[in-house]
Image 1 (tube, rainbow, N blue to C red):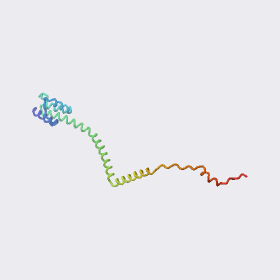
Image 2: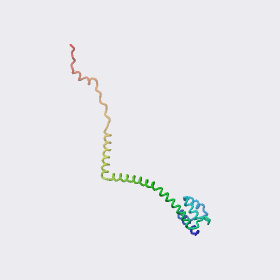
Image 3: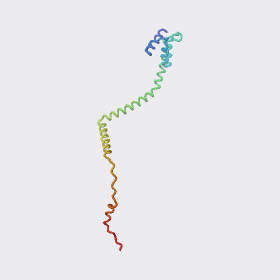
Image 4: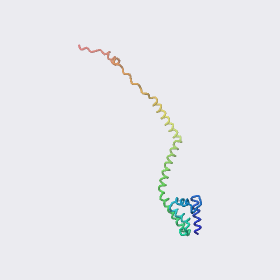
Length: 157
């Protein structure tokens, strides 16, 4: 039975790392250390050369695997509120983009766009036409006083 558990450990190692397990290889130990601590324990015990530390039955190995999976489930359940919030935010931004795209591709969107283009073009034309006017000519004193010459002076006698 321990031999079968060792074979299962070899299969798991090959599936995880894509290469055959060699117990004397330093890279094998390094690969196992890259796993999460709880999975390291399961794989190390399944691949152990020492028969005293190896799993003696499938039930013991299955209990350890269940503990690891239950912990992962607890983490997954704890992260659900964050995932829901993330999905709601992404949904909102997606809906706003869809709504903007829908408006801009509709007839009303084209009408608004053409209206804004005309307004922008007209405002550019108005700004180009506006030329600062020269200051008005200041008339000389003779021109200003000329109408008053027609007035006859009043005699004091």
